[in-house]
Length: 326
Image (cartoon, rainbow, N blue to C red; front, top):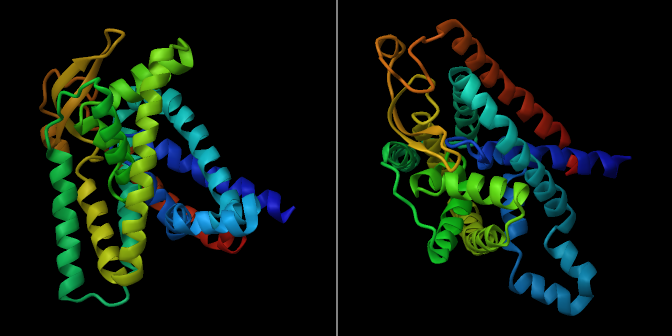
């Protein structure tokens, strides 16, 4: 019974990470951190390599499975897969129908997440404050960068996989948002995965997805080791930098956006490509503001912000209570 509950909890945490990663600006790494599995995830992924090889040689598959924390990865990544599917089909509807409320919820969520991560730094000093500022500046710079045009070259697709999965592992940076900046969000998640693989069963789309997955594999195996080393040797600086990443990313999930550029997807539907944050007052004066309109809906947005903020407290308490069984 205890084992079943542990596996269910891991699956649900993975699903939450998967849903987060389909939303540009929301990080699955943030969800991993506040649910208490972030460092365990890094250690598990980082164990692939010499440690896993030695375990295989001495104890066979059972030793390998134990060395990589196989049950943990199996149920977590299984949940992530389910979450990604739910995010692709469900969150796209919510973001189209209730964009201000959805972004308001995630704004509150990330504010609370930044507070939780920041409190993990026991002693703030000049070095940790510098790391906080640098993390904030870098993340904010990413949110205001203009999207690239993208390319369907398999080499470019591979590189996008490396970058996206590396961003996934950083609380405050979103893998899907990095795909958006690289000009590949629509191509990878919708044209390739949703339409090509899931709906049309196109072999060409399967190849593209496989190359992207290979890039993700290379990225996760290398970057996880870097992060694990940073946690082991510079934990306070790393935590301060991650807090900065979250603070800087708030610009991307600010609910009131002025749409600057749109594009047509593969089905001929218009979608937001680039936008900038504005205050609720300025938002109300906008004309022809695609998708978002110009009604600030201030009360409902503030309510969902508070809900998102409180939701993190629930998740953190849930993660703490289940940590012993994970």
